[in-house]
Amino acid sequence: MIDDLQLEIRRNRRKNTATITVFRAGRIVVSVPTHFTNHNIRELIARKRPWINKKVKQLASLPPPSPEVQFINDEGFLFLGEDRRLKITYDGFVGAFSTEQQIVVSVPAGLAAADQARAVRKELAAWYANQALTTLNDRVEYFAQHFKQTLQAAPSRVGVRYYKSRWGVCKPNGEIVFNWCLIMAPLSVIDYVVVHELCHLRVPNHSRAFWRLVASILPDYKESKRWLRRVDHKKCLAPFGSSRASMT
Ligand SMILES: [Zn+2]
Image 1 (cartoon, rainbow, N blue to C red):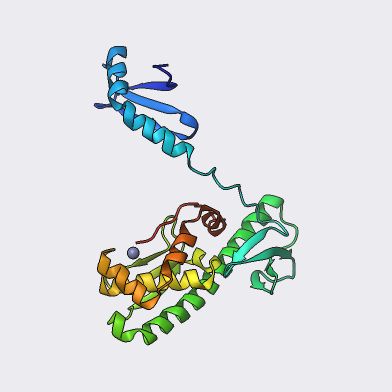
Image 2 (cartoon, rainbow, N blue to C red):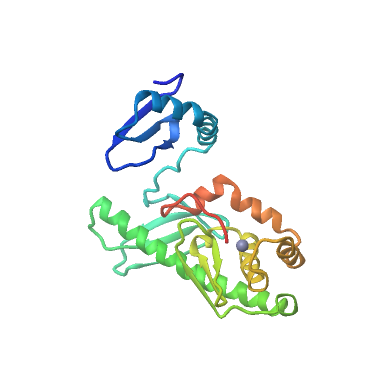
C-alpha cells in the first residue's frame, strides 16, 4: 500500500524497465526489475500518480462487461434493429431462419446443454453472416449506383466477417469488408457504415473533406454514429464475444 493505492508489486528477473497496469475495480499491478528497491517503487508511483489517477477514473466510468449470452430459448437477439426471440427446434435439419418475431434455429436433438448452446451459437452466427452479406451487398450496390458521381469509385469486392473491434474496413485494393454484427443494427445505421466505407474509396482518412462527403450522401449520419457509440447497442451487437467496436 502506497498512499491510498492498493498495489500488487511483482519483481521480474527478465524485466529491464518498470510497468504499471491499472485494471478494473482499481487493481494496480506494478512490475519491476529485481534490482528495484522499495524507494524506487515509491518514486515511480509518485511520478506516475497523475496517470494512475486518470486511468482509475477512466476505468471506473466504463459500463460493466456485458452479461454472458446463453443461447437458450426465448433469449432476445437483434435483427435490423428489432428484437427477435430465439426459438430452438429439433427438426432433423441443422440451420436457421427467421419469422416476424423469432429467429428459429434447428440443432440435433439430445445434445448436452453446453453442446447445444455451442451448436445454436454456430448456426445463429452463420445465419447472421448470411443475412448480413445479402443486405450489405444490396446497400453497397444501391449507394454505389445512386452516388456514382459523388463517390467516383466502386468497391472491388464486398465481404463480411467477424471483427472483434470494427464495423467495417475499406482496404487499399478497394475491397470493403463489414462486420456481420452490423445486421443487428437498424437499416439507417447499416447505411451509415456502408456510406462511410464507400467514401473511404475516395478519401482514405477521416479529414473534414471525408465527413463532408459522408454528409453529402447522408445528412443525418451523426445520429447513426451516435447509435453505434451507445453502449447498450454495442452490447446487443456483440453477443458473440466482443463488446468493443470502432470503425476505420
Ligand atoms: Zn473510417
